[in-house]
Image (tube, rainbow, N blue to C red; front, top):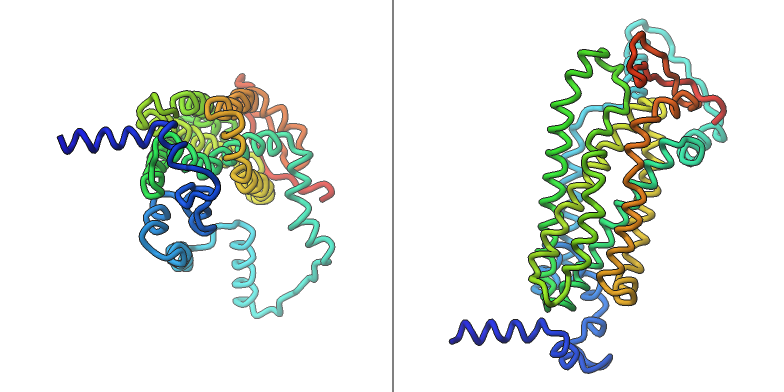
Length: 361
């Protein structure tokens, strides 16, 4: 009987009518929109943040973040240099010291340095079709991913009566999907790339073959968004929308990993860093902007149609990796940052991709 009463009580919390009775208005202290500012902000933090906001002072949220940053910083200190340009510069300095020759320092004009560091990524974003379309696709996925940090607390709080700590636990599905997506990309790469290297040679495999992961995972994001949007309601068990978030995370990681590898393989170490910088700027801009209007969008359009709106945009972006796989070699042939050399084979994508010297900035 006690268990049954607890079950009835939990179901009464889920019903919209009882929740509207509990939230009597803007003066009701139990209404989420009337909680203290720090609690409203930090209740959207995943997993750990929900428990900390319920059981400790809000300053501990900042301490947890600081501990993680310190760990990452300490972990990165002993990592070796991987940037080709810096490695070559270090070798040159070592050779100069061994020959006992005075180093020759060439001053780079500040304007040229600013153009190379600041303006070049933005130029590549607008003049390079590969960078533009892959960045738009990856930025949208990233923005939707970050919008979940606002959507999950709103949906699971209003529809299922979850507490902040329970809302945080729903993000485990996102973490699980990210792990599955990463392992899937590694599996695809391990199964497909060695035979391609045997066929073309190490280091000269056409970069389009890096898009296998994106092509396999691109359909998962819209499927997940439609599934999530139309099952996240009181009449459906909360486990359904939680599981629905897994394929989105899988598809997001697969598109991101494959897209980053494709861009890097296309532009090489000389221009790839600038291309990925442009990609990062747009991704984090979208990731920072979307959560600002996510709750308003879901409350105005409804959970189903708001999620469907994102799903329709995702459907429109699904062809991007497929189009680049088919026509990427033609696009690269007209790039001012890439040179391509045809190989003696019947495969239309058979070519050597290399770095070109930049014409202009």
